[in-house]
Image (tube, rainbow, N blue to C red):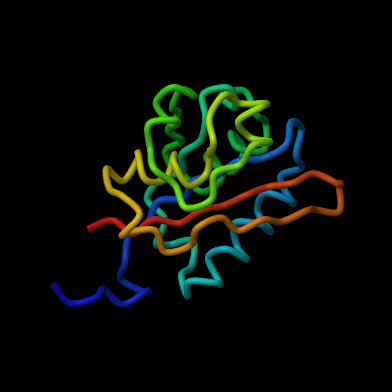
Length: 138
């Protein structure tokens, strides 16, 4: 199957962030991650994260602003996904070795082979961290 050009590709974002991350920090992380893969916001079909972030204001605001569905997965579901960058820190605090990578792959119903961007890390001016992973939809 031929590769899909970035401008016509459809992708899912896996997102993780510190509690109370500013919307600007999350948007900057997303835009920079998209730029790494040559995509724009128009290619995004959904965002995915851990269910413990279901009340995270910046994630909810970005989902509404862009009209992107926001999908949530439990730590147990995320922990079942093989990821290239497991984190002991994420495991300690979230109960799973990965959030952004695993959530993106679960949402896309795929594996590492469709991971376009493993784990883009960004620290905003608010001092909060955000991670974004990008998976191609087939």
